[in-house]
Length: 239
Ligand code: FPP
Image (cartoon, helix red, strand yellow):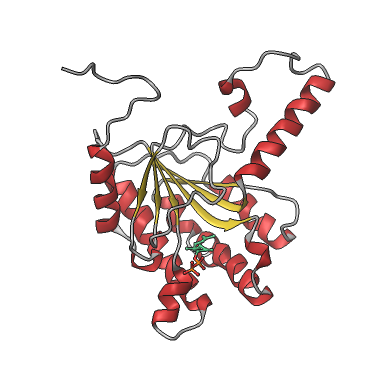
């Protein structure tokens, strides 16, 4: 299928708490509806020909939330990845989880391993969930791995290209995002894909994450197509 959809769309799924508050419900209710929005978005992205979809599920900063909200956020992985795994396998979705693994429980690590292993031969849509993820943390871990490689003679010391460094990041198997969407009206990148966002187009929408799905995704992609991407070059010369 030919598609003019951006190859890689990344999303900061924000606004679950506010969505729940508007309905006088607990924040965790908003997160559960957020999972439904994620399911709709995965389906819509696949249908539109997006090959890579990366979403921010839990940040390294989210640990500062109240303990019951933290445990509810952990449960989301179970609620989505574990429960829907058969469907994801059948629909050709390859699941990857990026982020810091240390600090996660055995139970969560098991979910991650099963999801990655069972979907590893799929390639219709590459769904990457950033979980216990922070861009600065990812860059530090990459620098540490590189230093280890130099120390053990596995990498030459000295000059390094951005592409070589990118090979140490959690996203080494993924192209950089073309489009990053943030929902709920906030206009920040919040430590998401800091390195990879270098040339991404950013689209901010007022839609709260639990209301996201096919139409808001389509409209963000239309916005993307109106942009002129220059990658630091001058673009077409002025007439
Ligand atoms: C931001 O809303 C959202 C999160 C911190 C969690 C996002 C998770 C999901 C949408 C569910 C899918 C996740 C996984 C891991 C499968 P917020 O609580 O910051 O909302 P607020 O800004 O309105 O308070």
